[in-house]
Length: 365
Image (cartoon, rainbow, N blue to C red; front, side, top):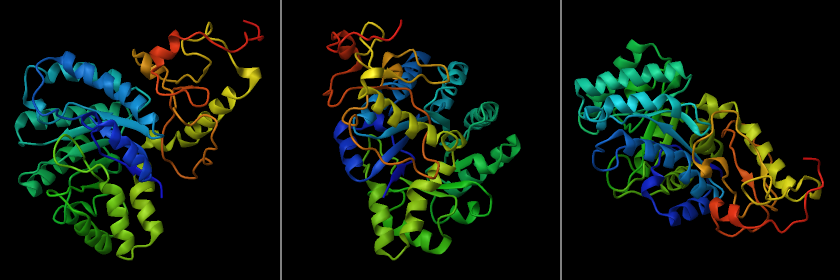
């Protein structure tokens, strides 16, 4: 079963988690920009963090065959901080044009202050300008009131409900959201928020339409395998496998227009690049590219300033048979350099310093 983890903060997780997730069937993750545990004091800290999400985290994930996507935003907690809030709003638009950015999030309410409402509305407008969906964080305290206030602000801005994911829901909030036309997210935690058994009861009563489940795993007590665990519980409870797959894969794909439009291109591009590394006619020498013996696929949007974003190797995938392109939306176009089989664990920077060992390319320059 293919699994899309639609809300996880891999920035705060170790590399072993990627390996465990891949073994459990997770093939794509979405990482919303979030609060790091303490407030940042300058916009430069946000820029470094945003660059990490579109660069280094994509590189880490690809080593285990996992596609890493993200959403960008000023989180609600730091929306209250005048040292950074306006400055972050100024740099945010350029990140919303990146290939791996599927939406605006996490935005929403935390302490439910006027400033949080102001920046929630501003970022909803940004999402409309960039034709992106939004991931809304709902408060953990006084949740029903927070849900209702978020919904009111969304309606005031005029963004279509089909573009809205209201996250961190529960049995109380699904009664509010089920007829709105928005997406309902449920965070499954070991001890707080929702648990797998409660999620089973919700699915049995309300079905799986416009629902997603996630682990929201971060630096706290959390489990990055909560989505596969929940899928297993659902099957054990007698929920049809087709409905479980809809919940853990198809639904998340459908909720992002940018992802839905580019799935076939992602899979076809990856297969084409791997084939290129095995074909003598298409091999090129290191003098022509920064990455040794790579077939480069360029993105159509503005590339990141990070070299990692321009050349993300797919470790361990070259030379292997890949699954056929899925018939449903599930990802977006990636920019990467497909490397020869078994390149080890060297970084793109290290590979760029190695001399090319293949014969010089005979193609005209």
